[in-house]
Image 1: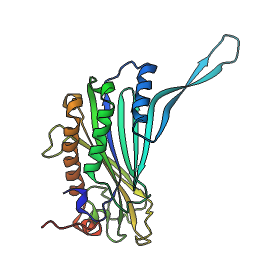
Image 2: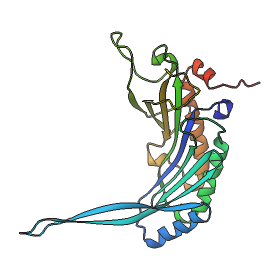
Image 3: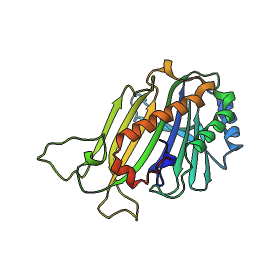
Image 4: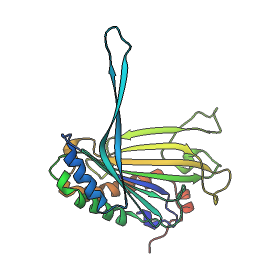
Length: 264
């Protein structure tokens, strides 16, 4: 099942991330990256890193000197209800799709559009990265859910927190789990984070419980990471795995609140 089969998909942000083998990068590399991003993205800004050096002189107070250096570039585009952020460092390439509203609402671009945008980024920066081995690939979905206040958390979600009967009224939680395998998806692992968040949806009941369901599907072992030429195929595989984890983590009651569309 894909997110397009919900009339109100809970996806707030999608992150596609590639970490490459470390390399020495000079100003020419960053200049080429800047020009490539500027050819497609409307806003381009530098990613900077502050470095502090402490100078110690015998018999004198220590002095601290601060310098700032450019470590990459970020491009930003806003198209309709989607905000696109492309961050590029010497060994990392990351694309974020963030929905414009603070709570998932309005039109959602869907996976085919996200996949096509990342394919465009891969082509745009191929000269800088195509010969570098990928060390880690990851696909992360951040979903925001407004759950009914009635019933335990386990009523609505199949992943979460167990508590003894003497405790009630769960008000704060942040549960992070790591899983080495995903059934039917060899070579992929998952990080699942469940956290209490504020409900910023005026259409939800005032007592609704806000939950962030954060799913990151990734390669644990560099040997299972894709080559640059197979990155798009890998993300399609990871997307299917992420959908499986998501659908296995929610109840049918939650599906009905998201407006699950029945297939003919």
